[in-house]
Amino acid sequence: MDGPGESSAARLLSRPGAQRFPSSRLDLFILREFLSRETCAELIDLIETNNRPSTIADYNGDDAFRTSSTCDLSPDYPVVAGLAEALSQLSGIDRSHAEPLQGQRYEVGQEFKAHTDYFEPNSADFEKFCATAGQRTWTFMVYLNDVEAGGATRFKVIDKMIQPEAGKVIAWNNRRADGSPNAATLHHAMKVRKGRKYVITQWYRERPWG
Image (cartoon, helix red, strand yellow):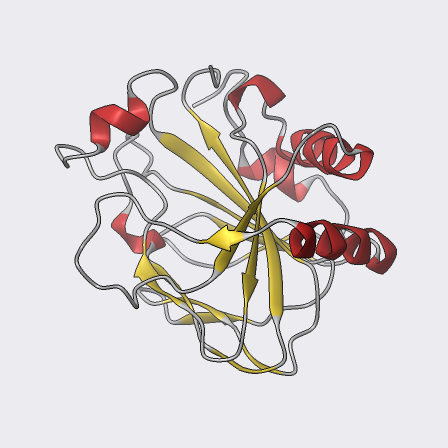
């Protein structure tokens, strides 16, 4: 898979310090110190100014499935536009394929239970979310702070736990090599036990975001 909407292992591993988790089940990458702590603090301030309860596609009846808050981050803020460009440079994916950046805040006890980022084919909301820009391809998630306790991201199928760390970015391909959705990307934003957790997520799509 190549083109303006695609990243690759070669691209990501060309960044000094980038690591690939050794698994045949999914493509998962980790890069520490992607953002400075000063930039992380500026983004946290933005998330605090304007957030709302998080939602999910294809509501499953579990009101405790995702309990965080979400902030839609406007590219009118230079720090947001700068992050979007930095992620595009890291991934090699053209910014036209990027969804608007979102920030998430997790209080003590809040979580996002095990889920995948792609939209389930044949689900009730598939056409609603994928008609224009297509399926989600890559996810890039940036941790903005060190959490006092809890808040890890657990990839359940490969039993990999990633701890929050200010400035660290993780990235994964939501598809298998044949382009089909990869269920092994199932991941759980585990409960925060002490403090707060802040992350920013960048999802990319098959086609330009319209």
